[in-house]
Image 1: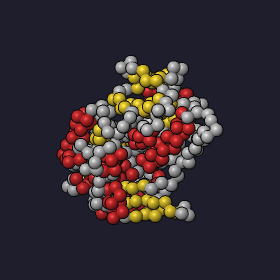
Image 2: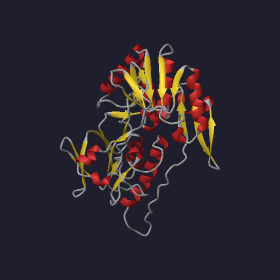
Image 3: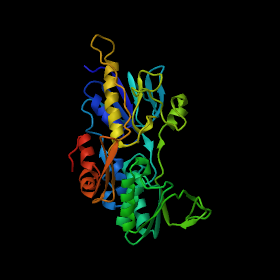
Image 4: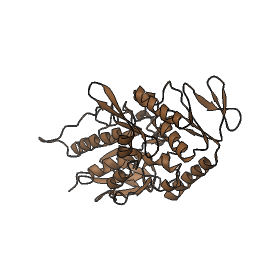
Length: 368
């Protein structure tokens, strides 16, 4: 006997974790526009190296033992009827609905289209453009910009590669100056031109870019790793704009419920929790939301579970690969400090495999 109907909208890291956690105790339906799970952590390398083109795609078919996964587009949450409406007209009843639609990332860390074929074609196009470019510009010196610059440099040692960052140091949003210095040293040692305090915008002519001082840069190809946009336009179009803050994130309370709603939760990159939007945080939110959803479904009673309050991760481990055999790992330690670890730790934990075996196991597949 399962406790109720839970509809999870979005099959990214948070949605998959939550659906799997609830599979044994609720009737779970996971809805995603993609036909497979997209392992975004592997996408930057897949956009550069042909042999990685298919790595980010992991089927959903082994994720749930009892629940189901639907490939489809959600257009509305009908809170009056407690139903999720799909573009096909199908209605999914819910006792609890979870918004886990994540955020939209810049190319190439994006699943283009809805099928594996469409997304793989997009990766192939990026690979071809990178292979033929003489000068490649990456804008944004956060973890994604640094990682992408390194992947491009290793794939194209003969090309000119420039990384332009509007901040004073690479990785400065992480709060670790040492990590930023290490990233800059690696890139410059590998002949990547690093431009700091350099806010870039498209120039007047095609293939030109201009910084805040008016300096013009020519490049054949550019990638903008300057942030993400929450996937919530569909909520605004469906009349739920009051659920969103000014940046488009879903407003949640400390139990990860949408403000004012006991039966609507939002987890992962899509919500307004103030923390780094990284995978460990999304997984932690999913685990806490799973507990609170179970408590809600089991209702009142002497032994009813109390909801837990989410504590934002202000200090979370962060791993930035520089290709498959190097990188930097930031590890919080007691006292408010951050340990900065180098290539060996980074290679073993992420850089070599980009955590693909781990995610394959999470979806019920072998690590290979």
